[in-house]
Length: 99
Image 1 (cartoon, helix red, strand yellow):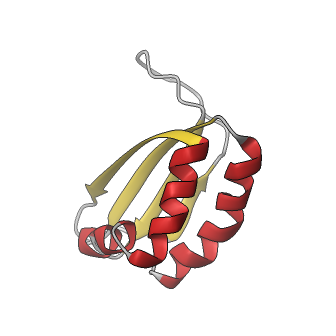
Image 2: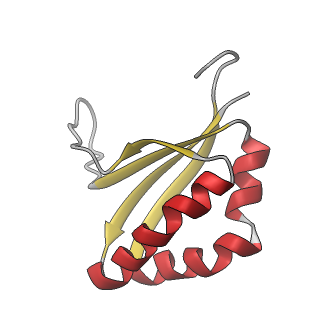
């Protein structure tokens, strides 16, 4: 069953984050991740949540997403992101037959 990382990112060091952005895409693709949303315009329709940069990544399963997030190959990039941005990230499973 497909699973999705939903990520809110508030960048605080644009130079360091730019290095992360450049390196993360091939790393993510090699692990089977696909961007569905990457920094597009956000419009609040209800509630008090006013996120800035949003990213949504699709994996074939939650296990694949976890494997990527915990992988040695992503560890250095994760540390780079964590140094350059405040991040909220959740993993959610889709419904059977999605995307």
